[in-house]
Image (cartoon, helix red, strand yellow):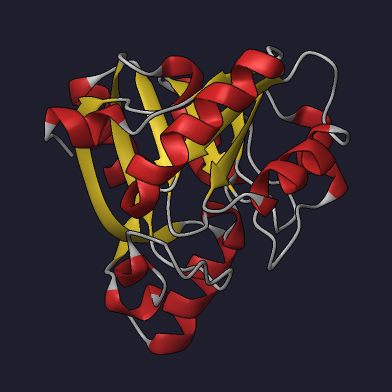
Length: 210
């Protein structure tokens, strides 16, 4: 395959830079504790300094993979797939989600919302970042707002973000892993005073699974 053809296929969403794919337990947010097949797509320019998958940022490091192969692998393991990254919405997600829908697979997305929304989603988890704010469409369709709390100012950011989502969106505060011992007591206190929020923990890390 010549380079130009490959670039065209990536830009059209027919192949995607696949960092990794694995069957595990969802560790975060509304669906924590549920089995799901995770697909991590390479590429992200949001640049969170505390990101625990910085190796996903450069999409060129990850093999361009046919979306049919991604979908076929997912169906062998689960009827629920979680598309994460990196930042999946850097790419055209319409072709992949169309195939997954044909296979009767429920499709969850984890995104910063910083790019235009493509794809059809059964669950839309919006995790906004300060450096590159979400597009309006992501706020409108978010099923779940998950804000990472790294310092006290992030509570203010979380409240600002919650004003933009729809009224049915579930609200979660999640401690940044490296500061969890300091942040968890602050989140507990905040949620008890503001019960419309819920606590999200990275339970997969406590369970020592992917």
